Image 1 (cartoon, helix red, strand yellow):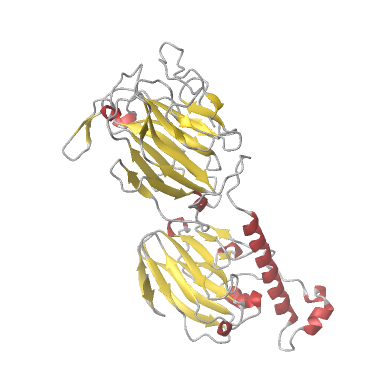
Image 2 (cartoon, one colour; image 1 turned 45 degrees about the vertical axis):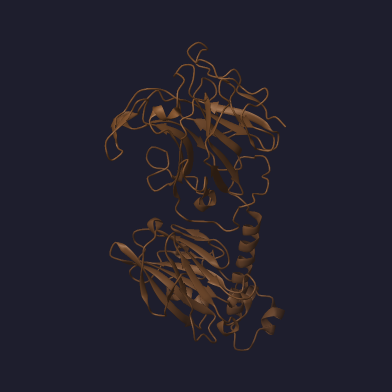
Length: 478
């Protein structure tokens, strides 16, 4: 954590930041907000003021009473400066009543802290500003108090406080008893405005408490995840897991999309082709041919039933019903432009229960080590959809490479679990018992089972009308 001083300017090196106002008192002591300003120092319209009653705009999202998230790449081109403010108006306090206030500014790799000083009777504080400097962004540690109040601050920056979003009731509509009780130095309209801000804050807090996860189709109730973080992580994820990785797990916080339906989650197996050759730098010199059969084993946590999604005829899944997965089709070899072969599913990021990625390497494609198929790896990607409808180049990515060169017919390359909005990948590759065609699965507690009783068996697709398993659904063993 690097400390910055009042008035300093610091180059920002990350794309996403959270700004948090930290106080020693209880939650809600200070209320955070942000204003999106053009190069003229004004908002474009009232929607550029992000606070309780307007918690989200392009690139800026209010996460809690003290925390706001800013995605620099998502800010509109005409926005030149994002000013983050803090206010004590709704609490009826001044900043002299809030000792040792500190500001944390955190990106993926950069962490800054700022402590404004010398605050007295102010009720609004201009905390920091993130502003453009050419093609880059910088942080301005402002720390400047503003004693005229939040409504005056908003008006100064072009926000119409009389608009429907924030309009205070007319003086005539005020309760006459409450107006009479107002301090003689305070205009009743200002008192009303404070009431509106306080009411908006209460509504925001209630709404945040009521929303535990993004909206999704009705699914089984989640069980508590021991490692689930209470706050949303906006960290950019780029993780590669191999058999030599010291930690075989990785996570993506699916809540970072803030419910944006344009974010997409995909899980797939990629490989370079059987017998692919590589140059000295490890790049593909020649793609081989060959097929791997990929099966996505999904466990329902409530019923303990399972469904298997694959490229097999009639078993490609549906995003409109459990397990809310759709298979994009069977891959017979490298794609267009000599891209890796890929079989993948799109998954709606909700409480899907457990998902196993199983690979079958026998019968039609010949027994042998999976490594012969050219660096097979499971790819989990999550991000805003590009033109293809799949996660774009800036998506979070977890790659799990197959290792160990086993001759088993089946390999489970990844066990994926979504709980409380956090996706966890167990990337330890596990193999079926040698000589058996029985597909690995999960028991009723979600633990990997090498040879489940009454589980499906692999078989030749060529001899069975494109159906590589003898069953595609059932009950997980106890």
